Length: 252
Image (tube, rainbow, N blue to C red; front, side, top):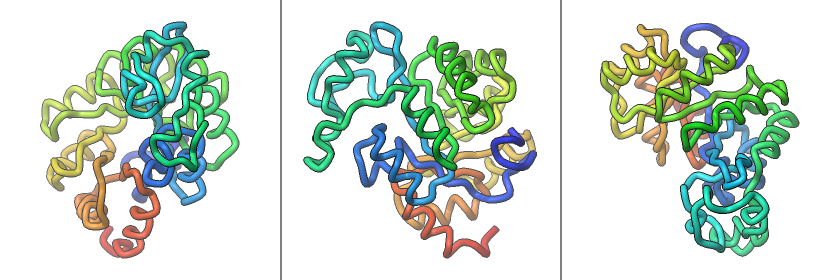
């Protein structure tokens, strides 16, 4: 993790993670959203990963394509070729008509060409071998965080490559959640902003874990997170977070 954050232990500053890219400004999990996140100054860009029927890893959050494309159906029942023909931008704005669902390889190319790190959310168990293999092929082991709500995939990630930083998405800020994170050798725990409190952050830090807060919507959410001592803030709008940071610079 020292290669990723430039330090050991608790991060020296709060890092900004663009949730599904800068998804407040462009269709989530698309190259325009990733590019906008980098332009705005996010430290990390997050994307969600799923496998198609033919085993290709694509950047999609939902199990179905209905919400973010012009088609219907399960990702797992469509081939990569079929998914690549979909329009993943018009639902957000006519300005993004024709934008495609990116492949994992395209996201890794984006990271390799930019001064940003990546958060790779494994939305289904069983894809970690394919994902980690490509991360290693691109030489990005020290620039990504692999995350999941499941313990088993994160344990597998550490077995495949112990250098890669991992994050467990926890349902609640409890001691049992921290134990689960330690069992799968995670480096970071992620908790919703509505459940965040300073005592949990302190306990996580004592256990050697960093804390990522998500569901951040307002400058007030950002300030509360900074006051609680978090290490990462994940939001759809990285610009809002960075502007709020300017007001909170003396709080840490």
